[in-house]
Figure 1 (cartoon, rainbow, N blue to C red):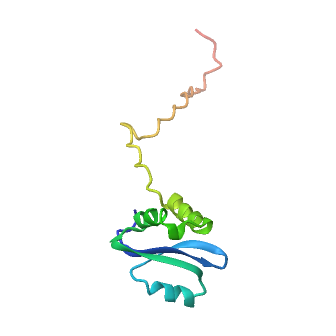
Figure 2: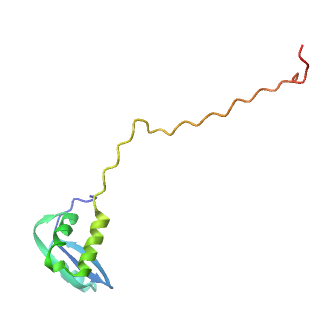
Length: 117
C-alpha cells in the first residue's frame, strides 16, 4: 500500500447522493462530516488501529454495513485498492532486439560503363 497510516474508526457516509468509505482516528469525525453536509453517516470504532484496506475488509461483514449502499461503497473501495500482483521479474535480456542493417550500397565509379578487358 502507498501508506502505512493506521486508523481505528471506519465507516461510510453519503454526500450529494454518493456513498463513500471514511476513515478516522476518533468518533468526532462524524461531527465534521455532518458539518460538511454528509448524511447517512455510519461509523464504527475498532479495538485496535489497522490499515485502511484491512479496516474496510473488517466492516464489510458487520451488520451495520449490510445495506446495499454501504456494501457498494465498500466493494468499490476494495476493488480499487486491492494489492497489485508483484511485477514479473525481467527476463535475462531487457534490451530491444537490434534492428537489421540496411544492405550496403555498391560504390559507383566513373568507369562503370567501360567494357571488360
